[in-house]
Image (tube, rainbow, N blue to C red; front, top):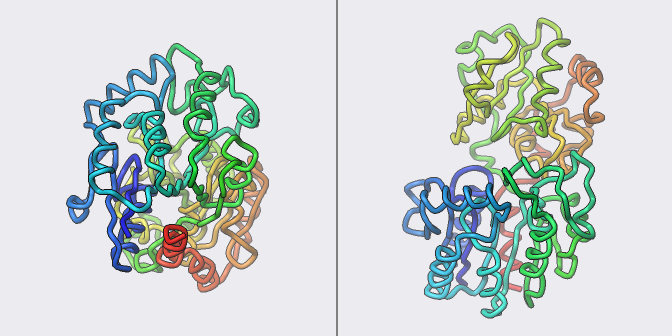
Length: 394
């Protein structure tokens, strides 16, 4: 069997690692896989298994067009036509889509081809962009226009941001036309929460199944390091937060507020900050920029006393699972999909925005490290990604 995957990145960040994890599961089962990606770099060991869509210059040009005209997903015609030629050359049995946004692809051109080719398609949705007129997430602003007709998007300045136009209504209609009507397409979501949203959207015509994202338990496990010594935290209880990008929706301001009321025996560590954010932190918050090293993350997770996920919008909560795999219990907000990954053996769910309650729960939190690891075993990557083989075979 031959599977062709398409994603914005390959081998890096969460969705890129999911693609290469699936590739390894396929190859270990005797199948072939090729990954087309649109931006950034690829780890050396995958370079003979990938196809680059466009170039760094074309990504920047498409991003500029999207910011001027609010038309993300409808540029990059030339690059997408070249991608189709590569798909035809590989001649896959199954085409597996992931993130189609990211200034690298023309979704109309791609889906016109998918309808002509009439090959089985799997589409793993990692956010909500596929069924909105603009944004990738909408829960934090309480918007439900996507259920009927997006227009006048209130998040026009959020990714994929537009500087001048608000074409949410047109984008919604163009996406609906492009994304519906594929004969043999199955949607996969990493959470029940996102599956419920799909069933309320124009994508409800498709079968939708849940396969949570998987993690590498050979990497994410209790790991010794000198992290506490290096940062002068030997006598502190560490509250840890991790994100690829820190903003209001990830709970950045909530961590700042928490830092004002926690006791002196606590210290907050935030991973994934920009240099500008690092330079403006309170004294009791240690800031670390983003790392693509899973081993380094495991070391940090392992030395934390509690993992705090104060995000208002998540389609699964993968970093929470990674922390639990390293033996660290979690406190999470009751928003979107994050509560699905914790239970009474490994974490606590609190009302979103209730910083005082978070502080109270921090003082009394006590969970068994082994119980946290046992919960995380449900998300072992080989177990999760072998489920895709079943859908490929079907």
